[in-house]
Length: 131
Image (cartoon, rainbow, N blue to C red; front, side, top):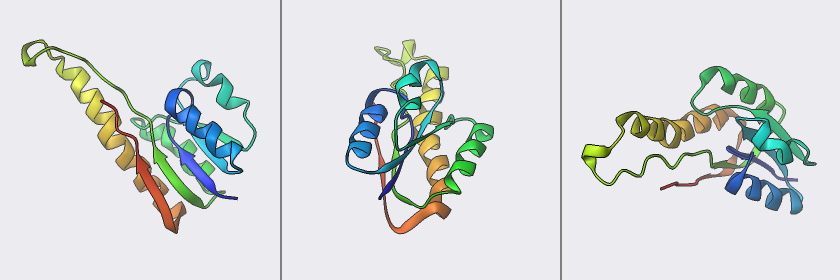
């Protein structure tokens, strides 16, 4: 049985990927930030759901503890935010841009770095890009 780590598995694309992999016989480790929006994930079979935020180093300790029980075949960095759709530079909210960079750029780097000791030598690492 293959083991897949999916960030942002509580809803949207991450939840859809989780369903697909579990229906195909995989064990999934799925991260989520909020129990309310991850209700379906929390009841799924063959899923180890872990509360973790890619921007919060302390919450990633939960993920690291969970990963210690697995060897990962596939890592999917899916957690992401779309951000502000400002029409131009003048209207751009710099704080929102910083949040997008934190989540969409540094988040996958943190997760990949954390997961490295648990990845098989022939593992696949994928990044979902939001825009």
